[in-house]
Image 1 (cartoon, rainbow, N blue to C red):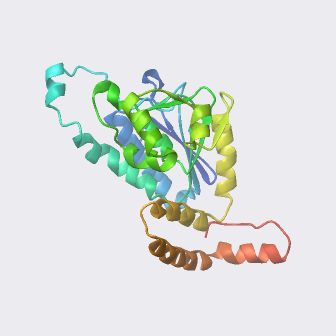
Image 2: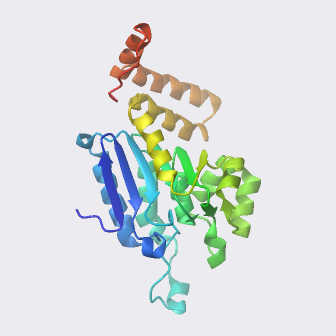
Image 3: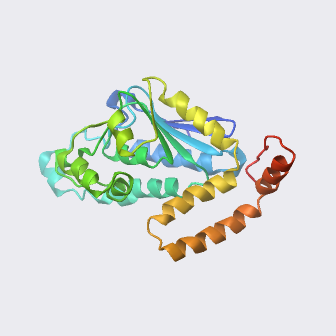
Length: 264
């Protein structure tokens, strides 16, 4: 399948997936979301050997949220079920990212607004350009935050700051997002993707069975009780311990050499 609104590049074990509609700041459309799903099909194919995903945007934006351009009349807009598209188009992608087999690094090269901010927050590690900003833009058009924002935000920055961002709809600059703990690194403009690729290469050459399990442990920890989390750690440690990478890691430690992990 030819991708028009997403750009997928697979460089060894690293997949770079970019929103690709820069003319509208990579606003999300049905075609873009269809291409997003198709790209994930390729990324999840075992033969591709992808061990880390970098998500970014083409042009000067990461993603400006849903594409509101078109010929929809005010009357039609008032009658539309604004939640229907979430369940049919957005939620399946968010669930696939949450359950992806490998780590995700997001390179926020510019504005990340509305659902675009949600996709940025799906990264296990988030790198942002210095001039980038984040915005919960929903209140500006009379909607509620969606695409997992109300779950992700309070867990990343706390309830008070999540409410501030959502109720006021103000821009959150990258430097402040770093201070708040929303993102991991801020780099000079034009360097977000390069920095993300450095991180992704390090992750992709690591013990990716264990790394995939680590991301799932932290995802589940937000809702698990302490006892449930102990049980999950036990289960995942058994899985990691049976992987070839564990044996290689121990051999490399004993032989005082760098480990050659294969993600198996």
